Image (tube, rainbow, N blue to C red; front, side):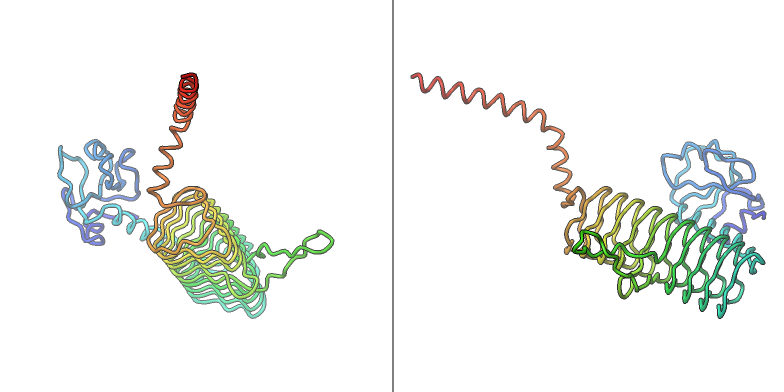
Length: 350
């Protein structure tokens, strides 16, 4: 579809500089701009490209002062990055709106309740007694177990597996290959040295506005529920163990592992490859640097920690500087040690 600068500015409440009638039908990076596309400039490092780009329309911040003449039509907004994100969201919703209906090659079992305006793709399996809310999109090769509940306006991408009894809220996104509700890692040592499996009879509850990345796994609880609270965002390749609770509006980056029964507070930010021990608690608003090892509870709200084991960020940075100088310090130590030994000998001889 074609959109004019006037239409885009109206949607974004922006101010036009240039030809209001110019139209675009695609998007592009500002450094790779082409005629008929829209770009944005939010990072000052890319300002050079604003004066050479071939993009027809560029979103810029209202407070940006131009250094040269610009060929493109400009739309000034309060925040170019957020405005661009809004346009992408509108574009995505437009594409999703085209997907409606139940494919003939899907398998819908007994007593399944389907909402209005849903999409169910090829080779989707929905087991008995499950419920799918209005406007929800389930892409090909998804498996949904028995007694599963999925809310409205949720998108489930290709190959997702949702085990029995799990509950997914409204306006969620679950990316390809994610597994929701597999057994928690529960085993009891037996007298013969073998490990007896502990049945995992709980479920997973994912609240509204949650996004789950590709190939992320969230285990069902032993008893009760593993819970991902409202607005949390989980990256790709994350492992959430049984009975974990992730608080509202948390951000967790890729390859993080959270051990069983850990409780993470609200608005916690977690870098990539962080490991959490089990049965610990993380306070609200904590920020955790990449590759940290969290071996105990973090009780102070707003803490910023890093390292393995994790320590306050300022201490970690000082320790890192000291660690780099250890070879020099070692040489100085042994040099001083030799000097001291020599002085001792001299004093003894006197």
